[in-house]
Amino acid sequence: MDALISQYIDPYYLRILMLIGINIILALGLNLITGVTGQLSMGHAGFMSIGAYTSAILSMQMGSPFFLSLLAGAMAAAFFGFLIGIPTLRLEGDYLAMVTIGFAEIIRVFFLNFEPGGKAVGLSGIPQNTTFLLVWTLVIIIIILNAKLLNSRIGRAFYAIRENEIAAEASGINSTRLKVLAFTAGASLAGLGGGLYAHYMYFIRPQDFAFMKSIELLNMVVLGGMGSIPGTILGSVILTLLPEMLRIVAEYRLLFYGALLVILMIFRPNGLLGDVRVYDIKKKLQGKKVGLWQSSN
Amino acid sequence: MIWQQLLNGLTLGSTYALIALGYTMVYGIIQLINFAHGEIYMIGAFVGLFLVVNTGLNIGVALLGAMAFCMVLGMLVELIAYRPLRGRASRLSGIISAIGVSIFLSTLMVLIAQTNTRRYPDIFNIQTFQVGTLQVSSLQVIILVVATLLMIGLQLLVQKTRVGKAMRACSQDLEAAYLMGINVNRIISFTFAIGSALAAAGGVMVGIYYNAVWPYMGTMAGLKAFAAAILGGIGSIPGAMIGGLTLGVLEILGVAFLSSSYKDAIAFGILILVLIIRPQGIMGQKITKKV
Image 1 (tube, helix red, strand yellow):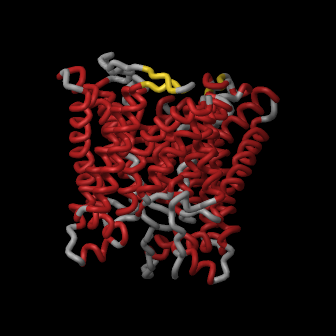
Image 2: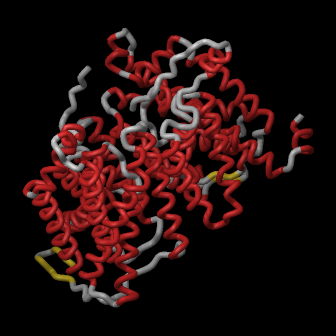
Image 3: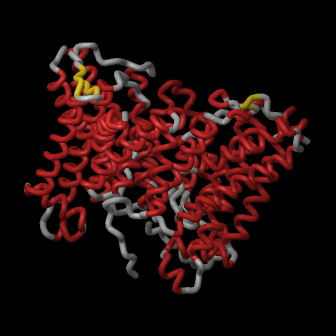
């Protein structure tokens, strides 16, 4: 199947499709933390790098099978997500954002000095096990699981915490446990995405996971529409394609990218599909009225 | 040895404090993390460099020139990228817009000045004094004096003038200030101007002190200054000063006694520890959540 795909799709487009898939997985993870539960995380690339390095080192130096490496990467990232989730018990808003930035920077500096990770040079020669089929199968599974989660009791509790934490607690939601859960789940997706990325790119180095990468992922979630799965997917697709399409303007690429972010925010301040949910669209198509809540903060 | 490190730390910390003030003032009024602030600092350093090299101006005049340029730039950024969002968007949209501006400005500078590191010309007669066992360079003295003067000036402006009173009113309650007849938009513009001028001063002085100016210098400095503002308690002006100095000193001590390859990690590690113990920062007020 994969052979067939690589035969019919141009390698350049195939590469973009792969990156879109990986970015969707990463952004859906961040969407759980920031979009749905409302905990501003600006260090998602930190979790991603943990997954990438863990899985790459396991594959290269321990000879572990690919799936086991991926799983271990996701687990390691989840563990750190759990650890970072704990300070959220006491920190709010921008203080939390700073902790996540700081965490991601510490991880980056750690890998810069980490002998088995090749220090600043990074790791190269990671087996290229990530295939088109695998990425997109995982994307579909994760989208379905995400949709199921957000429509469940836990998912609604996540939204409730974002909307008003005190009211949520008054309604019997254990916000502490759920916030840590959101961080753990989101981080595990970042770790999985990182593992896929490492085994696709063949080569990783600490600066691939710097602050700008976290920001890029945050852009995907916010641009598409906070808390919305279709929005996050759309955001990932657009922001993966945009730099490619801007190649025609060559060195002015990032100039346009920056300006477009500002313009998009001015015209669609709540994201392209702010809080649009599959469930609501389905209801709307059936001609029923639905309340689309606006995110307040 | 320790006193020497302390002096170096204070010098570094006073520049962090200058940048952190811009973050904290803007945050105090409109609750926006202005991620473009680091880029304003970088552009300030470049404008200062340009004035010294191309027009042969005195460094003091160049410093004022850079501050004036960034004042206008800061107001322009606010007008174009933040004002249209105000009141009708979530806070995150503001942050993304700020990041867009930050990417735009740093790329613009790369296009204008290329990525290589530039240096201030060797026109300063830097002398080193020996005070006891302490090595004090004239540059350190100048940086500390200029930073102190700017901070005193800011304190006077905020506490003693009409505009300062209006700024304080806006940071307490934007809507109430508006109802009292304060031109809120103008005060916000003014806050951006002051913050940007302070960042530009920091940029020029860091450019001279470390003898390096390059288009990406704003990213890490911006993050550190944001960390300093958070450490001091964001929204609090004395907090930003104390946070900046604390972070600078601790970072230099960390490098001296632990390891220089972990320099950036040390600053953030300390920050996380402080926030876990004191979530509202050193000077920040505890916000009681109300229903």
